[in-house]
Image (cartoon, rainbow, N blue to C red; front, side, top):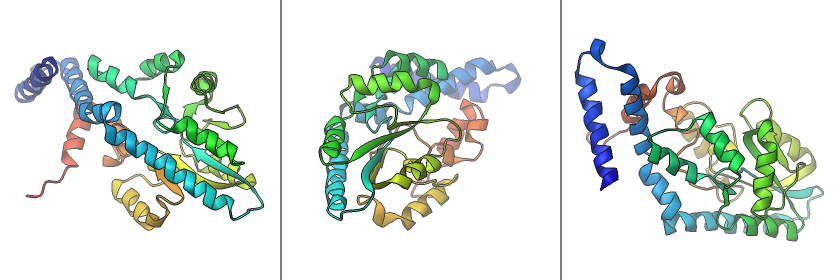
Length: 271
């Protein structure tokens, strides 16, 4: 009930500040209100990821299918060593606790908040993730973790993985050192290994999908036969590169602008 009242108050404030004269509105207050509103928009997705049986089942399903794919590829006796490439966040480590914290505080992601979380090294293993990594090694493969966490975050990231009982070391932990694209890092691994499967929660964990939502959907359609066979995606409705694809100016604008872009991207059946 408290959450409902809080959300209702937020909407009332948004409406009120939208109709009063722009010159007399307190800009900081308006932005804080829209930031809180954006945070509230992630509540149901966060609840689904934290509590639902369906989300948990979907994660197990991904790892089970990827195991089958690995065994299938192993039977083909490639000359190169076998490997699997996995993303880290929301693929093998669960950071959704941070999103729940943002919601409770009426905030959104910030480098400072992320730093505090990362240094705490409290991200839990995703359901079935440790078992999956062990399975790959037990069957003669190796697991490479490609992440867009920065090089400065390496120690905390590796320590967190080891605390959660993942088989990991610096050789197999590939951090972001330049561009966000993972293409060059994937290519480097593919020089020495046959990569049997790729796992992630974002389309860019598999391919450079493009900037616009339309372009990204088109590329996925072109590769439709590879999903569930070579590429294995764990659902993440809370955050990801899909958000910036809404509009090319998405991260160039403020919280109010982003909220409007989110809403304008929706298409109802009566339109």
